[in-house]
Length: 617
Ligand SMILES: Nc1ncnc2c1ncn2[C@@H]1O[C@H](COP(=O)(O)OP(=O)(O)OP(=O)(O)O)[C@@H](O)[C@H]1O
Image (cartoon, rainbow, N blue to C red):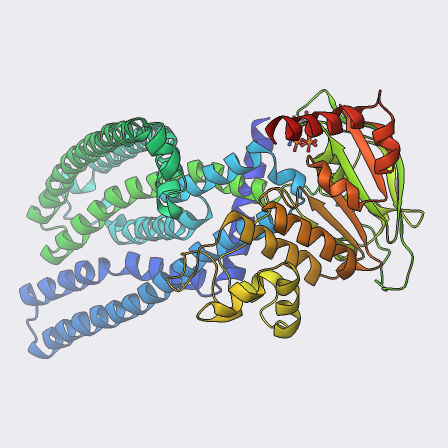
C-alpha cells in the first residue's frame, strides 16, 4: 500500500516539474543554477582564506598573495552577480507560476461540466488548494523553493565532504604522533556528526509534521474569514440584511474569533520554530566545539597547516548545518506533495459528460423537434426523482409553458434540456438523435436560456448582450429597444460601452427588472432556434411583462419558446401548457382546455391565482 502511495507521490512530483517547466521555462534552470552557486559561494572564502593564510605563514610571496586576494574578490563578485540575475528571473517566473497555476483551476471551473460545479465538494477542494497556497505557500507553488533548498544543501554537503575529507585520514608519516596516526579520534568525530545528523533527521521530521498540522488547522479560520471578507469586499451584498436583522455583531464576532485563533496559531508556529531552531543551534554549536578541538589538536601537532584549520573547520560546520537543512527540505517536500496531489486531483476532475461528434448546422428554415422519451432524473446526492418518466415532443415555432408548484421539477426539466445534466433513464432527442451524440458546443448554440438566477457580468453592456468583444452595435440596440431598455442605454454616458456594476468606477448599477430585460436581449441576440425563459418576467412590472410577451411573439417568429412560469399570465401566449407535479408530467393542453378541466392541477393553480386577484382587487 505504502509503495503505491509513494509511487503516486513521485509521479505527482515529476508531473508538477513538467507543468512548471511548461508554464515558466526559465524557472527550473534558474533555480538549479541558483542552488549550485549558493552552495558554492560559502566555500570561496573558506577555501581561498586557507590558501592566503598558508601563504602568509609560508613563502609570503606578494605576487601570489595579491593573486589569491584578487581571485577571491573577483570570483565572489562574479558569483554574486549571477546570483542576482537568477534571483530576478526566479522572482518574475514565480509570479507567473502563481498566476498560471490558479488560471488552470479557473479554466477548469469555467469549462468542466456544470454538474461538477454544483457539488459542494468540488468548491471545497478548490478552496483548500487556495488556502494552502496562501498559508505556507504550499502546493505546486512551493516546489521551486523546496527544490532550490534541497539542491543547495545537498551540494553544500557534497562540497564540504570533499573539503573536509583529508582531515579524517590518519597520518601515515614516520614522524606522526600516536594521536595523528590513530583512527579513533576520526571515528569519534564521525560518530558525533552522525548522531547530530540523526537527531536533525528526527527533529526535522517531527517539526515538519507538527508545522503542517498547525497549518492545516489554520486553514479553517482562514476559510471563514475569507468568506466574510469576500462578501464585504464584493459589493456589500449582505448590507441590507445585516442592518434589518442586526447581524453585524455575529459577523464581527466571527472576525474576532478568527483574529484570536490566528494569533494563537501564529504563536504556536512561532514557538515550534523557536524551539526547533534553538535546539538545532545548540547541537550544531556542540559539534562545532568538538570540530575545533579535533582540528586544533592536529594543527598544534603540526600535522596540518594553519590555513587548513580554516578549511576543515569551515567545511565540517557547513556540513552539519547543510545536512540539517537538506533533511528539512526533503521532509517539507514530502509533506508538500500532499497539496500537489490535491491540486492535480482537482485538475483531473472527471468530466461526467459524454461528448458527441455529430455537428449541428443551425438554419432558420429548418424544422427541429425535441423529444423527451421516458426521461427520469435524480440529483446525485438525492434519492428522490426530480423528474419521473417524462415523455413529450416540442416542435419548431411552438410556444410552450411549463408550469407547476415549487419543487415540481420545472428548472430540472430545463437543465436536462440544456445538457447541464444528463438523464439517468430515458433519452432526449433532437430530430430523432440523442442530444448526447451532438457536439456539445453546437448543441449549446442551438439554445438560448434566461435562467431564473441569470447572471450579467461587469463587462460593458454591449458585450453582455452579445457575449463578444466585437459586437454589432445596431443589432444590440435593436434587441435592447425590443425589450424596452434601449432608450436608457442610449442615455448612459458611454452607451453600449458602459460597464455594468460599480466594479469599474465608470460602471452603472441597474435595477432587477432592467437586468432581466438585458438578459432577455442577450438571449434574443444569440439567435438560437430554441429560446427558454425560466421565470422571465418575475422582476418586471405588469406593463413591461405584457410588452415583452407581445413583442416576443413578433421578434422570435418561427423560433420555439419555452416559458417556465409560476405566473399563469404567460400561458395565454402559449399554444401548449405542460403541468408538472412532483416531477411528473400530469397534464398538457391549451390554456382553454386546461382551464375547463376543473379537477386538474392547472385549474387548481389558475383558480388559486384568479381568486387571489379577485380578493385583492
Ligand atoms: N442541485 C440539486 N441537488 C439536489 N436536489 C435538487 C437540486 N436542485 C433541485 N433539487 C430538487 O429537485 C426538485 C425539483 O427542483 P426544481 O428546481 O426543478 O423545481 P422547480 O419546479 O423549478 O421549483 P421552483 O418553482 O421553486 O423554482 C426539488 O425537490 C428540489 O429540492
